[in-house]
Structures are given as C-alpha cells and as structure tokens.
Amino acid sequence: MTGHSSALLFPGEHDHQKSMNNNTILGALDLMGYAERMTGHGFRGIASTLLHEQG
Image 1 (tube, one colour):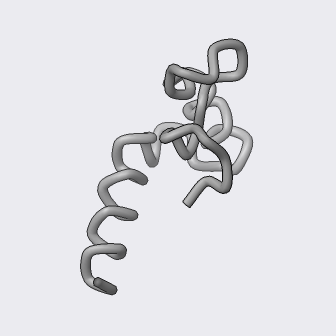
Image 2 (cartoon, helix red, strand yellow):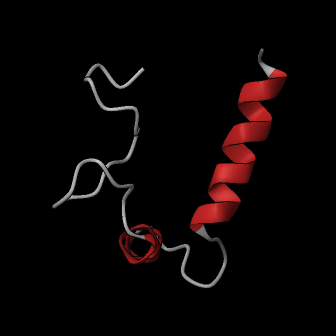
C-alpha cells in the first residue's frame, strides 16, 4: 500500500521504523483548522470504519 518496503503508512521523520509522532499529527490537524475538534485517533477511527464498510 505504501509503495515502499516499510509497513508503516506514516513513518517517523527521523526513524522510519517507528510511526509518526502524535504531536506531528496534532500539529497538522491544527494547521488544517481542526484544533481541539479532532484527534489523530479520531481520524484513524473514521478511516477504519469507512475502509471496512467499503470492503
């Protein structure tokens, strides 16, 4: 799915074997205008539900 040998869709910036830092995700949400309205875990839950519904 990622097109690379990594199993992670969002690898860390410095250590590609670890997932992206939660603060990085929260910062991105803030820049998109979702501060204090959505969390990274919330987006993961929504994505999981939609992907499961689509098979």
